[in-house]
Image (tube, rainbow, N blue to C red; front, side, top):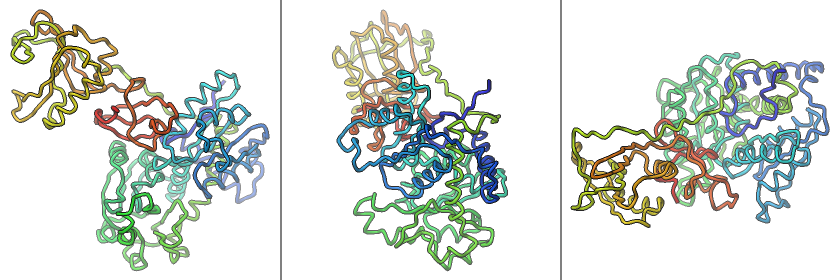
Length: 529
């Protein structure tokens, strides 16, 4: 029997669905939308779940109108049991854990949770725990979690409706896209989802238009580059419109200056002006009739980045964009319920396999005798860690040497640390750790050391010779290692939230470590408390 790949699927980030899976959902949304305006009940009925025992729970821990109401209307169309969570009187306000609250609701025959929260990565954590809860308690279903916006991380269902609208306006072609992202690109979770979401187009050119204070975070810029997008950066709309290569699609976001402190608020008028479209800009658009503006809404009523005078112009595609929100969410919920999706064929999201490739043993070069010394005395037996933080400043190396001694528990043993200059590269410094009382490092210690200080070399010295030489890279996945933690204070795994979420990090191609929950990027030295 063919498995419906959408049934009981969670949507935590834009990358949770493959390009083929999204194209299928968009084809279904097109079919639904056309049938809606024809009043074709036969086709519409094919999307309806029509099961009042199928529970959908809206849990909005932050205010929302558009997302919440579009999901509510979608649920009513589908004919299911819809529950609305009252955050004002919830147990979460009494410092009770999110897991206990959500899993209790999952046990009451609620299969889908639509969650908005300031805590980033909360849906991923709920998804993992929901699978275990369902198995332990033999629920007969696996609860699905849909991210309706988590802090300044992502908003994947908004990304789905944005992509559908862009494709619809592109006459259903996904060949190419040139889009300008304008506004608060630092806090805007809708534009963050585009770093992966816009991969649905074969050729993507993105123009980032924001003053430095509101610029896109590096982790999302890096992801766009990794996905092959062509990027350009501009500090203001005026600067952008003064050059000849202007996009035909503009995506505006609301500046969230209230999140950035008094210093920024004092300059709010200046910053708003840089990202607000003005009437005189219309004539600078190369083809206004073929240029479309989008906005996730709502606009700021006092300082809209897309002023009201544009509402009646052909530029206005943010209203169609908003209407499409209900259609895409009907299709998404119908697919997760298993009502549609059985006829899908194509590539799905593959589970990542992490190769344990971070420890490489190399042969010691006996043709070049090397006596390792601790101070002035040769080290006859023990462990020497070399190339520690190579290339960093002497001060940083010293500081991290002592931190590493504490993290690894080496301070219990006799030993010493030092900073030396590379003989092959004068002016380049590296740290060394001498441990004469330790004859070998266990696999667990090596894994921990690789996570603490990627790039170092471990020398096992026996009888005045290097018997084994190990080069350590950062592990592809860092998890279940005590003492680590995400530095993003809004992440569900951050210790201040007391949710007891074990930190986990994924190594990226450039060596950065990405938090599994919130996507925040770290250097290997940053994850240690």
